[in-house]
Length: 271
Image (tube, helix red, strand yellow):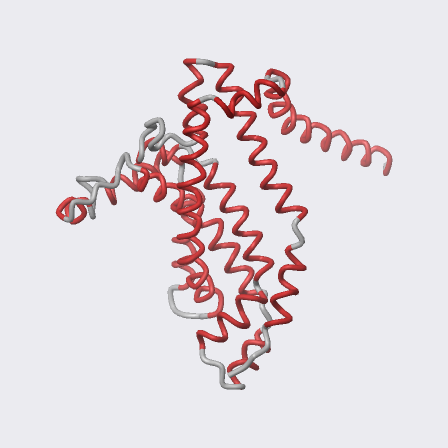
C-alpha cells in the first residue's frame, strides 16, 4: 500500500513538473544561445526592454512608497469595514487583465471619471508611458500590499508596545521597529510584485497601447512580433524567461532572513 501510494505521488509529481517545464524548455530548444544574445541587439527588443525597466521601476517605487504604510495600517489597526477594505485590495487579483485595462480607461480616460478634470489640466494619460506605469502599478499592488500586510501582522506586538511605552512616537515605531522587523517579508512581497509587474500584458495593451519605444513593453513586443517574425518572438520570449528566472533565483537565494536580522539589531526602541 505504501509502495503504491509512493508511486502515485512520484507519478503525479512528474506529470506536474513535465507540464510546467516542457513549454518553457521548448522555447529554448527553438532558440540557440546565439539567437538569444542576438535578440538583445534587435531594436524592438532593446526598445521594449528599456520601456519595461523604466516603467516597472517607477511603478514599483510608487507601490512601495504608498503600499508600505497602507499595509502597516491595515495590519495593525482593527476598525469597522476592515474586511471590506482587504477585499477591495485583493480584488485586482481576480480581475481578468482586459477588465483591468478597461477599468483604468473608465477611470483615467478622456471620457472617464477623472478624464475631464485631467484634460482641463492638460494631462493626458492613456497611450502614454504614464499609462504603462499606472497599469503595472494596478496589477502588482495587491501582490505587494497583501504580502506586506502578512509581514507586519507577524511582528510581535510586545515589541511595538515596548517602543510606545518608552515614549516613541507612532512614526518612529513604524520606521525604527515595525519596518525593520518586517523587512524579510516585505522584501519577498516586493520581489513577487516586481516580477508580476514586468509580465503585465492585458491591462497595458488596452490602456497604453503598444507603441514601439513609448509604451511597448517586453510582453507586448512578443505579441507584436508573433505574426511578423516568429523567430524574433521566440528570442524575446526566451530573454523574458531568463529575466524572470533571475528574479526568482535572486528571491530564493538572497538571504532575506539575514537582511531582516541586520535591521532587527538596529530596531532598538528609543525616544
